[in-house]
Image (cartoon, rainbow, N blue to C red):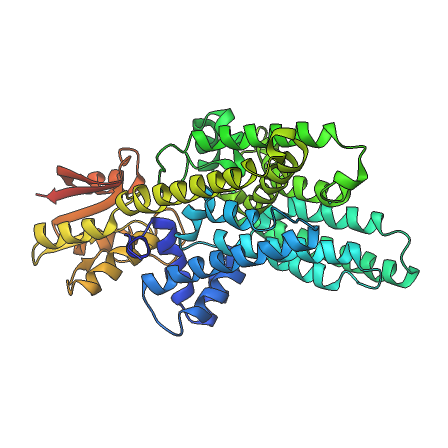
Length: 468
């Protein structure tokens, strides 16, 4: 619960601001920016009707993650896993990336849950002759409305399921084809709006190229580029790779033995596509047009968890050494023990004691260092939301620089001549650590302000300006 009360990260502040608005203002907002998060903001808006604070808001992500751990057990049952039917839940619950996003006030934890529901519906559609694609289509559309990037694996899987089910009644195929065409048209309209809104997001390129290529390829096994660094996170991809390699060797050694085959080949292909296709597609596209950030493929973590469970069961069944009655409980005890230790390390040490952006401490510093004539300059709506939220908790009162008409721009402030003329001669600018090239800094200097001091607080720069 300590982690649920961590200082707001700037993107979390944006989520909190958007979901706190009335539905009318929220609809107006998504016409300008973040249309691809409208479904998430709407659900979070409903959640905040019961309580209105950051801890309660973050509990929504934690709850979605908890339900995901339960739902993935259903996936294991649908796949026919036996000895390892609880391992997907265990691997998902101990995934560094999944744990990080479950403590983050953004849609990624919810995308995990919707992705699991989508895959469950795909499996049911494949195994049930009379099943139509309606539930699968609804699940896929909701998944893409929560996380648009999921289209890179949802569409191929739906189309593959349709082709595989060519022996169904003609009527069902026609219905499924119509639903798929509807999905494609909806996706085109939706993605066109997203691309129009995000045309100016040039920071993707610098971010993508600043991360080593191999680290980007870690995908759902990654944790090293997350908001909350995890001790020993570099070992996780290596352990995962070793486990999957041993599982693949075990599977290939007995591929001709039908009695030892754990899951159907189609099901295995679906799970593998779920685990690896999002990362491969996003990284591949980003080599030409950068759009990839690790947390954008969080919904593929359950696919990796299931593959790891299948690998464990394959090794468990096929390796002669592990067939020993004595070594079987030792193996499972070791896996469980290692998972519990990993969970303790991930949840207790780094997440509880590191901050990406400590805006709460920044607010406290402003309260102690300011004065009656100080004006606080907050260039973005996310910074304004976070600082004002903590000021309200601490019963502090600040004078804020007026906002402009377009609060969604890179600098959402009113910077006309009249505003500068009426502004205080003593201002504090709240910005990220790298602020030298910020437009607001140049504007302040052009209007006679001189920088007199800078204080850095865990990812936040507090820059003091005075005008003489």
